[in-house]
Image 1 (cartoon, rainbow, N blue to C red):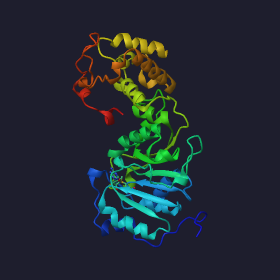
Image 2 (cartoon, rainbow, N blue to C red):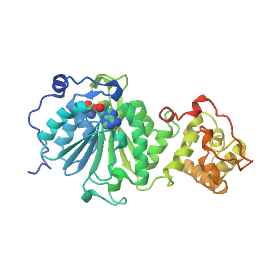
Image 3 (cartoon, protein in one colour):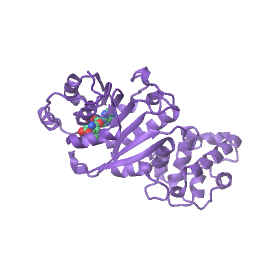
Image 4 (cartoon, rainbow, N blue to C red):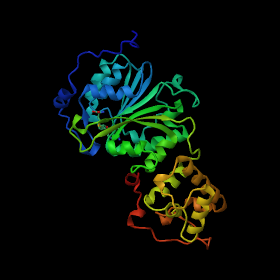
Length: 353
Ligand SMILES: C[S@@+](CC[C@H](N)C(=O)[O-])C[C@H]1O[C@@H](n2cnc3c(N)ncnc32)[C@H](O)[C@@H]1O
């Protein structure tokens, strides 16, 4: 049967609300569960992904399956569901049976899920080509959204996992404030590490806001839908780890002059000298602030930092937060220093992002 034009009509199914009641599925805070019961909102999210006919889709955190139903109606060739909470298995199995094409259910944690071999090989497209007909869609749990997107940006930079298939697009939800940070341009209050990392490897677009009141239970915040398309070439074409390290430093003092932030890349004995050299080579004024820097300017700082590493290779492992990372005993010029504050001893990634 050809569903391409008409879309799939699912057989009559109990409503998501009925299923939640029937299976006594109460939302678990621990898994950031807020359910969408309004099929029009689900259709609107799925529409952002573009045409899905004949494609392969992976939905993250389908829960009881409301977005899943919208995806099925758009007739992909195959659908993969990755859900951590086994309580949803019966409702998702019901959709598996109702779907005219294969729906695979993986009960597991998306954070450890490698998508390198889960789609058909004939969907592979060269990176230089248009994106393949493979889509990642998810109304993500708030607790997972930021670490997951950073993990996926890393996979994009390495062209691993789903990105072995080419420039696979993503349609994802975030807490609205986080979605704004993802797309934030320079000179804005919400410009941060997350903005730079996402925008360096992807074209990002904030599509629309879903009011918190639409979810059950209602979260305290609204939700933003963001569409990501991996770039043909990142603006800063350097390894993820170098860019991440420099960008983390740049945004550690958001309101202060960049000279201070860049200094955190270097141990105290060399700090002033190397921070000045880094900014001079990058042709970035020492009095700029991180949120004022364009991606090419940040790129020049990354390149200047790599040129400094050629002269001081031991600095590559220097981390001003974790003094124990540094093994510089045989370099008398480089001394250990106390951390800036107690907080600096910990990875504050999600907060700092
Ligand atoms: C915000 S709810 C969305 C549920 C459903 N998609 C909807 O829109 O109504 C997030 C879903 O992700 C699931 N989840 C949470 N952490 C997960 C993880 N690490 N891996 C996979 N699924 C996860 C939750 O169990 C829940 O079903």
